[in-house]
Image (cartoon, rainbow, N blue to C red; front, side):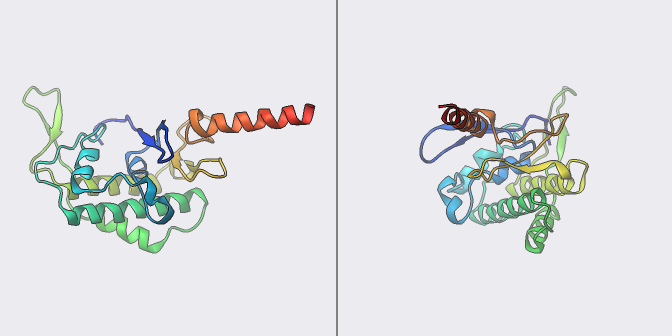
Length: 200
């Protein structure tokens, strides 16, 4: 990864948006859309959408080879695999074999190669830059996350109706919510109403 900064603005199809930091770029990627009931959150409609997402920090992966429809399909398969594996780990279940195979397959291709600029102080990615390389980099990060010391810190939001997953990197390991401005505040409001109803 190019930097430690993670997180993206997520948009609710019913309106509104909020900042969500999943704590890992691969998990940020897992929240770009989905299948079934999560299809309403889809943001990667065209190959260019994938290129645009990858070009944002922290990857800042500007494609020198246009993203293809096949790469978009592969990206969505990897995204689903990351989503399923993260939820399984958060629930302390065995990882789905198909998800593991998909992640491993993506990781087996050549990743992005960092390249030092002539000034010796900045970096970029060695060309050509292809989407498959970025997907490999994301898959490798997911492998490191699942097999590393933060594996036990993968959590699902504590809200009953929020499936967002994240790495709890807080020092005490006490993060419960996808975002305080969203589910955290909703929980506080519900608790406050419940207390007022009890007191009245």
